[in-house]
Amino acid sequence: MSLQLKLNLIITGLLLMLLSASAVLIVKNASEDVRAEVTSTANLALHLLDAEILHYSTDFGWINNSTKASVFRLNELGNIRHLKIEFFDINGRLRESNRSSLVPPDDSPPDWFVNAMGLKDAGLERQVRNIILSGRYVGELVVTPDPSYEIAEVWDDTVGLIGMAGIFFILINLLVYFAVRYTFRPVNRIIEALTQMENGQFSNRLPEFKQVELNAIGKKFNAMADNLQKSTQSNHRLTQQIIRLQEDERKNLARDIHDEIGQYLTAIHVDASAILNGKKLSLAKESAKAISSVTHQMMDMVHEILQHLRPRTLDELGLGLALGELIHHWRQRCRQITVIHSIAKDIGPLDEAVSITAYRVVQECLTNIAKHAKAHRVVINVRRDEQFIYLHIEDDGLGFDQNHHSQGYGLAGMRERIQGLMGEIAIESNFIQGETLQNTFVQHGTKISVKLPKQPPNAVMDTKGAL
Image 1 (cartoon, rainbow, N blue to C red):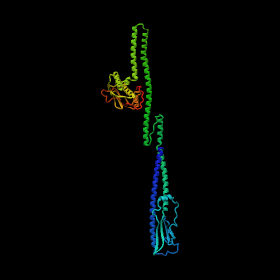
Image 2 (cartoon, one colour):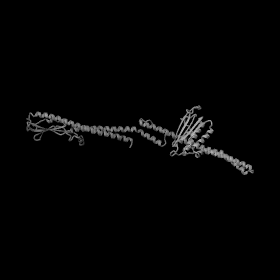
Image 3 (cartoon, rainbow, N blue to C red):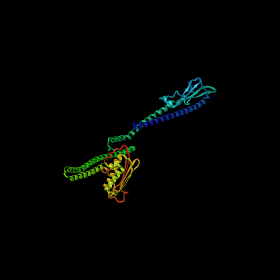
């Protein structure tokens, strides 16, 4: 059931309850009014008839055998619709009545409405006056309340009121239907936009709606679409960067193997041929020494390549010692920069993806500092607790403009690695145009804080890739 239909049903139910309560109240009030009016009319008629009886008690010449004589002139009281007034003589014959000239109502109300009025057996008993003249009983005057005409009037009024209420009910429902339909018309637009987003089309945006609630939803939707579009574009860019880096890595490996290892193998081949073709033992020994030297150089070369692809110390010694060795080698290459580092001795068991991510984050930060920061001082802090490991890298360099989206893979790749492990990263950088001032480490430079879970849930990471 749609929300529009629910609102229409709720409003219809409320209107029906209101109309029902109003009808019951109207019938109840009308019943009380009819009872009061009929009773008051009866009392008034009895009062007048008592006066009339008193008048005729002094002259009883009207008591003749003439049945056509008008004793109380009741035929002149035909306009009293709420009462039936009758005079019966001593023999029980009806001598006069006010109903001979009264026209009955055209449309009698239905029985259920009469019963709903509750005027039957409700204290509207007939009133009897015995006519006694000079001690002689001559007849009786009977006054019977008759609310039928008043009930007929109430029925006519009620029918008219119900008709007006029905028209009002229909108009209100139509008004509510079109108002709700107009109000929720933008819902179809929102559903269409969500469908396009489900199909991967993030360029669609919602307009500003007149309804305050829907306008707020539209703004949130547009903000979500902007973020998804940026994330998608960033992912596409990162994918292309990863592919390019993979090709560059393969090209570098091919060049190193061809240029370095190829030369070493050529030298080994030459020296081995010299041994095979040599006739003097001294020349064979010199060639063997050359082969041994070249072999050691090849081993060092292979070690460097493997270290670049995957730090061996990370697997053998753990994250703490691997970071210490990384910082040591970086300090040897960048002697002009002061490095202060504090690394927890017992970091504890870590997921393999977390270890390589933490290592690559520090490695990328040091690489960026050496290339771009022009820093004089670097602080590296690595600590842990029962659930997380924390990295903090800070320098007093030039910093960088975070509003400028670099085309490089380093920072974006760093974020992707950390977020893929359900971690957090915070970057603070004060961008300075020009050289960094001395002794301004606190005010300038870059601060990178990373929080990684020791055992990330359902983390899938290629631990052999580089940032």
